[in-house]
Amino acid sequence: TIDFDITAERETSREMATTAVVDPTKETEKLNKAQEELRDLRELVMRVKEGLSRLGRNHRYFRLRENRNFDTVRSTESRVFWLAIIQTGFTVLVAVAQVFVIQAFFGGSSGGGGGGRYRRV
Image (cartoon, rainbow, N blue to C red):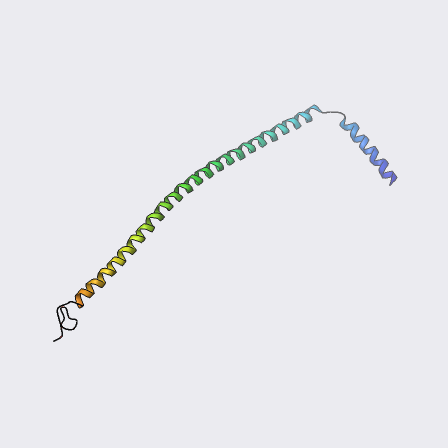
């Protein structure tokens, strides 16, 4: 175990000695690679930003459209309600008129036991 620790210390010290020498071409390549990655990252951020902007516009559009359509539904609902009330009233009125017409037709006051037009012979 001690040998391993000593070996490890020696290897790290050798690695440090070799990395102390800086190669300018490698540093330039690393810098160029980092700049390219940064450019790609910026493009990605711009695409995400544009997507979020488009999503926000679509959200506003659909919210406005929903509100407008909901107002139309409310006014149509009111019209249907009043049309149903008028139709119900008209149906009741026709039923009452039919009762009076039938009574007048069969229950006239022209003598005999309940005659009207159709008297017993």
